[in-house]
Image 1 (cartoon, rainbow, N blue to C red):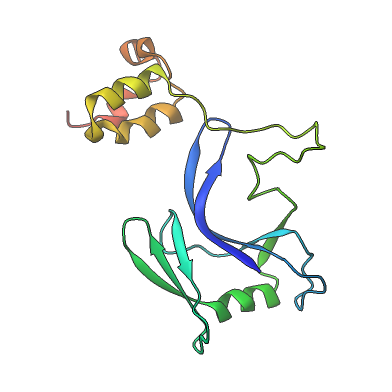
Image 2 (image 1 turned 120 degrees about the vertical axis):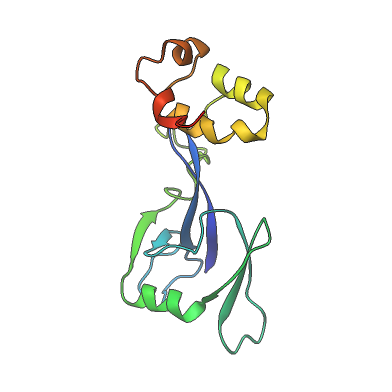
Length: 167
């Protein structure tokens, strides 16, 4: 198996970090009846959404997976728990290229639509110029589909009062 932990999911207008675990089956005749070259999402979440590095040491008698986040947090997962989920059917089959390959287009396909991250908006550029403490507002403006500075000034959806309560 090839197992990924966390990462990102790309949507039409946003990219979000995730706390899911995906498995790609690399061999034929899998002992759990899984199909080769298909991605499977295991039901359950990792301790935190984000990006992970994973280690599975050789001669690992406890069958533990060691996960490290980019900011240095450390978690341990049991490989036995993951295999139990496969054995018990606690997964979703996403097929070939579905979940992990949203930005990968098979060369012969003309019907697959790419979903790249959206370009920065006027609001994103303004908040970037103001510094890191304003980064938290980007997601809120995007959630309400505000893209232009005039939308903040006119505020037709009354967003400012909901995201900036005490300022």
